[in-house]
Length: 213
Image (cartoon, rainbow, N blue to C red):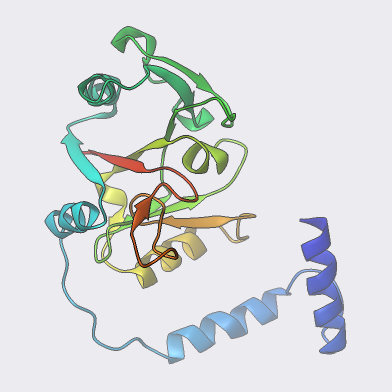
C-alpha cells in the first residue's frame, strides 16, 4: 500500500495536483462527471439468472433462509463430496456456529494445508454469476484463493444486476478502495495447454455459493 501511495502521489505531483489524497473538490468533479455520462441500456436480470450463471461457470449454488442455516448447509455439501470438515473461514463469519454443525473452521487467513475456505462476499453480479470480494482484516483474500474448495456466503439482497451496480455499491459504501478487489466467476481454470480446459489451475477447482435469504 505504501509503494502504491508513493506512485500515485508522484503522478499527482506531475499533473500539478500536489501530493496526498484527492481533495473534496476533486471528488465532487469526479462524481459530477459520472452523473453527466449516463449508462446505456442494460438487460434485466434476476436472482434465478445469477444461479444459472453460477452453474454455467462450473460452480454450484444453493439457497438457505438465514445465516443460522449456513453451517448445516456447508456440512451437508462437504460430506456429499467426502471433503474435509475442517479449514478456514473469513473472520467476518467467525460468529456462525460451525462447531454445532460438526465443522472445525478457524477464523483466519488461509494456509497451504487448508483444503476448504469459507468467505463472505461484498456483493455478487447476477448478469455474470460473479462474486465481488474485497480484502481487509476481516476478509483476507487468501481464504478464497488458496484452498482447493471455496465456499462463498452471499446475502440475496447483496446480489446486484450488473457489474456497474457492484462498483456503484462499493463507491457508495467505501470512500476509499480496499487494497484488492477480486472477481470470482466459478473455479480457477486455464486452457493454455492444447486448448484443454483444466480446472483449479491457479486456485480453487470447486466454488460453492450459499445464498442467504
